[in-house]
Image (cartoon, rainbow over all chains, first blue to last red):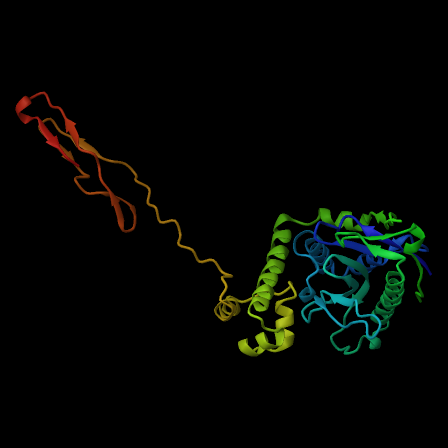
Length: 170
Length: 152
């Protein structure tokens, strides 16, 4: 599926920039889809996640202690889970680049009976989308197609095409 | 050649609607939780400890410490005191309340032959264990002989 990396200006601030992947077919980002899928059942938690992300970008930066690490396995070391606590219902996947850049993916309801994400089809799908994006981003950064700005708050490239991806989304 | 292209900006309509529903109090509560977690995290680092070491020292599991530092946790006061003592930081401010007492009014009772001052030489209290003094005052009377100076 054809996707584009976009900057979520409503969530970005001086401490961090927040991005997501815009799915061309749906004309929506992965994060917007996450909000739409979960607002009716978990509105209060959704709003807390939104405040959390905004405060990360405006006040605190993306501190590693705010994220659950090692959600992506080998080759996807930048993949974290946000807001993934035992007393919370939702899990949101994201990619972190230092404390200054976050790429928000999707996520979903996290059943407490599930021990491995692969046991939950929805979480597995969302997690694997970000694994694909992570591998492709790492490749483009490694090859110099995508770089960081001097303050590490943004990505830059030679062309906007460098922010387009073909990601397998079931 | 310097790279100049950046990802396009995206406006989320659903986010806009949800942001409008949020109260100042909700923002404040979320911010406080996150800043508290950050302060504890920084204090652990200053001590040169890993999170595992901190968990051991405070007799909690590493997963509980991860929760503490996530920025989503609601701490009990007992936990905060424990953390304060171990990391030698201040998280709860129990500064003294302002105990300045208002000076209500100074009563001056005047009769035809004498004057009685209720607040004499004593200092008026401005706090529970503090006082201040009145300046001396002279109250003239019509009869010179009964003229007296009174000092508060």
